[in-house]
Image (cartoon, rainbow, N blue to C red; front, side, top):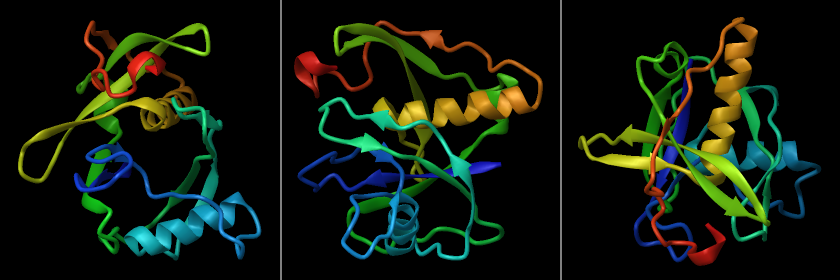
Length: 176
């Protein structure tokens, strides 16, 4: 299985150059968060004939202003395409190498809301060969998906490699 993430444009006011997933805020015509997710998926990467498989746990963002409600969908043979200038690149993430331990991922400890968390991050290649890092709420979404798949397979997800340097640097100040 493959997850598709998006690399956001470096020119954006918010989350410039960050890796995440298609998504956004509900609009008046959205009957629920599932409808919001499906609309955003179609608007941003052109996928509309998908089968929603389920949801993952809601994840707060570091600013505390939003709560991400992730949906997992099967897209069959369809492939996402860039439809909005906010997306610089679509990044396919093969899950098998993470599940088998062939590809490792990192984690750091971080404090948020007065608690200390193990915060995963995933280094990903771009089409040019450059490396970008999926971190924060988006990384928690991928981590939970990997944990759930590993549990379904009756195996454990390999442990992350603990790093001392936060991949987001000082981007979020004392909040990260």
